[in-house]
Amino acid sequence: MITKFIFLMFCAMGMITVEAHAQLFLEDGKKILSVSGGEHTNGSLLIHNTSAQPADIKVYWEDFEYKAPYDGSKNFLPAGTAPASASQWVTFSPPTFTMPAFGQQRVDYTVAVPSQIQEGHYGVLFFERSSDALKSQEGLTLVTRVGCLFFVEPKDKSKKAVIQDIGSKAEGITVGFVNQGNVILIPHTTYYIMQKDGLVLLRGDAGKRYVPPGASAVLEILLKKKLDPGQYTLVVNSDLEEGDVVVKEIGLAVDVSGQKTIENVQD
Image 1 (cartoon, rainbow, N blue to C red):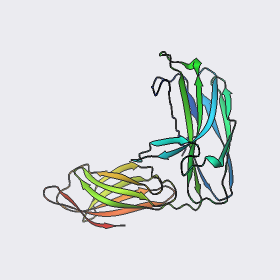
Image 2 (cartoon, helix red, strand yellow):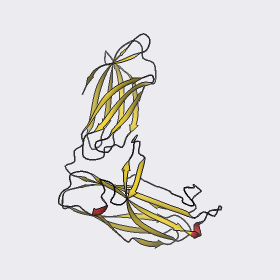
Image 3 (cartoon, one colour):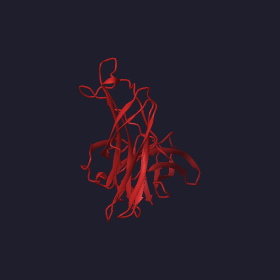
Image 4 (cartoon, rainbow, N blue to C red):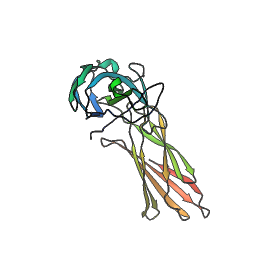
């Protein structure tokens, strides 16, 4: 599924946000490349100028890292500075170009993987427009950029994770998702609660996380209604995409005061 990733940054005397009068639209917001050592992969990206003015575009690479609490927010870094940077493998052309009003431009890229790849490598190819002709009413020069995220990962990647550190809170349960593999994992976690007789009482969605290798993200299982005293089983299911899942069964005991106790925890 094509994801559209649009990142707008307006700069003048620091970070000041104003309305954008010039727009860029990038058809592909994310490229996932499964590669072997020594492989060369070619492709292209199509960018559109949706404004009524010509656009001078600069193309450049930056590294990115997902940052805690791993809800999708990122740190952008100079090319080649992140430990898992793919910048040294990627070339692209043209590096600069001009698009006419409502025009479009295709930019070609090549990813040349070295003889060995043992973990995921990442980055973003940015397309940036800056022009004094695009000044806002406040007199600020507008800078617009859009980017395509690159995920360059080995074909034999390890998608391994565990759910641990189960805890109880007033609103529900917290669990820790730990990425033990060698690529970024993007788990989409759902859950349900069963009575002893197997009847499902509650279902819910804990959303997505974006977890780098070696990192841990906290998932919150919020209970939509109060549970009666008794014994229950909470089943947590984290879908890692491509058919990979991590499942954890957690025993819950609820007393007459509504206090929850974590009991048997099973994979």
